[in-house]
Image (cartoon, rainbow, N blue to C red; front, side, top):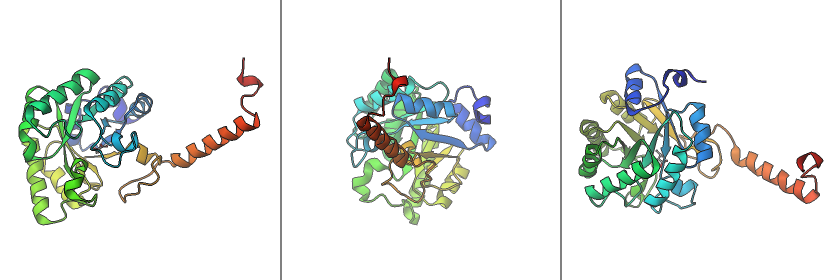
Length: 272
Ligand code: KIV
């Protein structure tokens, strides 16, 4: 059991800000289903993100755009049933908050009410300020997401590193400060230069959680299926694989098939 796990019985948005104050790094991973969430939560993770990356890893879509609000709520409710300690943050999917602040609030309320989640995350800065304010005014904690924002992939045209140029870096810094000022409790910074992420983390009091944003962030997030090596075709530089589950699972499946075909399974002890 980790030190952090003993110290914090239940992680809240306030816990994360306190962790930043103490210089304690924040760990965050994705989960989309009960079984995975149970393992991740009991391992002692601080934050579980029910990410719209479910669109890719669970449903096989090329982008995060197709996943619906109903589908996100289904994933989030499954995760919540497993979790005892982690803070559970749920992505507002593409199309559920961009058109107007009332819709953003309605979508967030549905997530909180129907899944039991603890907070929502949405992509963007000043351009979605009215939506963020409305959600916050309803008492729903909001995590921001800047840098590479996959819901805008067709605007960017590529998944390469963002904010390498001065102008975009300045806008990102302004957006981060703005999100803090209006009341977001944390911000995900995706695929931006490490120096920029460190600068943002140092200038803000709320935690910056990085993915492909270097070691200067206040915490790190990875997609669980990627760090477990289940998605072996995805190989960005920032990804550290802790297992090669694709190979291990494939070997196990092949062995099972062999055992069934040969009549080796079930044995006398494996039947009634
Ligand atoms: O959807 C997701 O998994 C995310 C992370 C990559 C931060 O937003």
